[in-house]
Length: 457
Image (cartoon, rainbow, N blue to C red):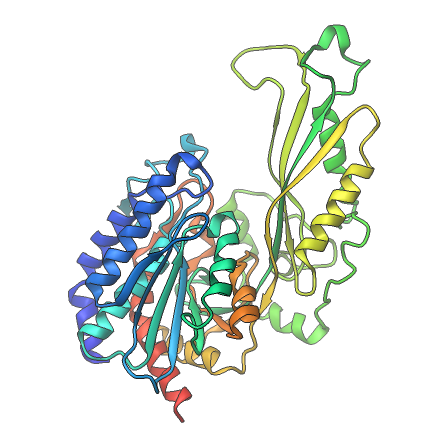
């Protein structure tokens, strides 16, 4: 292990320069304009895996963007770790809020600023470089497989098909994922749960064309007004969601589990200061940490319609649109929640408008038990490199694939991420600390060491 860590130290600058090259590729999977760049990012990852010593490296084609596959099988009797991550990124909009161009990475105060720096290129690249270091120093104790996809930010629909069609290829003992966060740089943690997701778009249509708001205002339903009223009605005065049946399958955490969550270090004042808000907001009867992890939500992610250009144009719009996401908790089915939303949203529309609901993508919540070998290996690894035991936490975000892996491959995932909640993922000025990048590369070999030792007892 000393040789591996020495190799990492000696090659830190090269690792960083290679990551910066990857971050310069605008691999935005949601926008067809960037399709060529998404593939270019896949090829970059594949080339780097080859240079790092992986075998059988190739782009596995799907109906969408390819999956990058590579492996190093050192011993058929050794345990196998399957590393999952994604090379696609979120759109960078709104561009005017970035302090530096999103695909021209800059380092300021030991922090990398670029789209994808934390989610998930920086964290994927930690695994590639940790693998390189272990292999170069003859210190790779487990077989390793890589499965890096390009559609995570748009729902991973083709990955599920790929996994179902390649069960033998992907057989492993554990799936290792770094697409989550730690509590703080001095408080390591492991996510033991993620929320599910239902993401959709709604359209409210009124008259067959935009109308003069003076001639028709007050006599014809305004789709934007109606849409706002409909959305506002989706929460009650206690900030609970009003869709009938929405909470039917929600698992309520018991007092013991909630008390354990309350022990997680959390500074409310620092939280508000970081976000520039005077107060938090959410469902009555739950703490901020609980609202952001173990409770379901409904949020508008974007809303538009009518005239939004410079100056004035007094129109009554024909159409209004919104994108809406619902974060779900264990036992809630994304498919069922999508249907419940659709039925309810259409039922509350007045007769003067027509409503369309278009589902985009979804995924199920995931909970990882803490008594597995994989969790123990991750815990031991983090304790070694951080000098303290990690805290088990529940993440508020969604990674749809762990439930797919468990269903199709029968394999548990361990979520050993190194980002911070304050890294502005999905937002302007996304960033990733050099400390976190290097700490990930340092820690991953320790996971392999402990996973091998625990698996071969």
